[in-house]
Image (cartoon, rainbow, N blue to C red; front, side, top):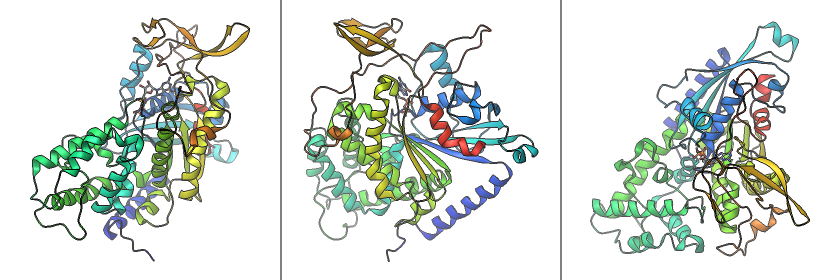
Length: 490
Ligand code: GDP
């Protein structure tokens, strides 16, 4: 039987106690903790802002039964229960989206927001006990931090070896070259050198950041804080990097390897474990946002990379098996939704195709993670719909197009946009079968992108005759809400 090696018993006991305490208080004031994650720029900030705005302003949500049937009396923000976690800056983000019509600043670290919903119960029995009240604690955090979980089970040696194997893949070979050259020149047994450690860290994290660049759209690899340091920005806790040329056996005391190994272990103890214990272990529900279109456009290697990242992210929520930490973390999460975002960039005829691609991306992860006891679903959605649909004629052909205001400075052909003028574009079709994106023999760079991707400005909100601003338009946000919250508001 494998030993419960990943965390100390003290950690497990604390997680268990926290969990019991939370549940006990949950009896008095029903609350649901919803985790919102995804790799950077997947759409977390926009999603949370739109979700809250639609609930507070009674948005058009026909598939969200509690809202559609008029049972939601009101929804409002309240003080969050965790003083140690920064508040999600909802008001600033809405001012950007609605008043200035600019996209808000993206997630850089963890934050939280409490939304309380008052509703009428469906059953006569429920209504006898006055109005129902549900507190929804939304926890926003970078998906990059979840990619750290596998490190808990890995020695420094294994971490170094795997980092190098990934860096040598054809699609990463070029961006990782300068780090690989620097790492190859280092003798791990030589005396520890702080300046060299810093150079190695800088070179390694520059390579990880370069992986994210548009054309490559790779999903990167751990350590997650190298890309999204949060409050550890500039901290010495991050000054380490994988090494090559490691001899068999233990590190020599006082050597470069000994120093890197110690910092790597400290990162696990002081950064990764507390994050899982204090935040992930307390989640009830989880939505994982995925910018699949960016990966699709970058070609099959980026899709494969996204699939790998998604597999690792989903493994953080699976029940039991192997790691005691993951067992405790995920036992409570009973609904997981994987959502392909920004579906307003394609015509609705392609929405189901996008959903099929993401389902395929998640399939292997779901099979491997064994989510027995948790419901898992996939959706293609847009938290904020920045476009509307139309048709254009080209010769005798009728083409489905999307219409919106491209962001200031966007260019299409000869035209440069000013953020006001509208334009119609034919975004392209996703193929009927997702198989094309999952070919093993795919070349590192693809040919023409599948989708013409133009960044649009957030939409102008309509006002009613009384001057009331309507809520943000969306695609399938109601389906998302029904899956994540429907049963809690019954
Ligand atoms: P985060 O890093 O996960 O917090 O990502 P954001 O929520 O900041 O989203 C990153 C960018 O994606 C935004 O600045 C928008 O340009 C775009 N985006 C996100 N969600 C949507 C959406 O629903 N529709 C459209 N058209 N663009 C979106």
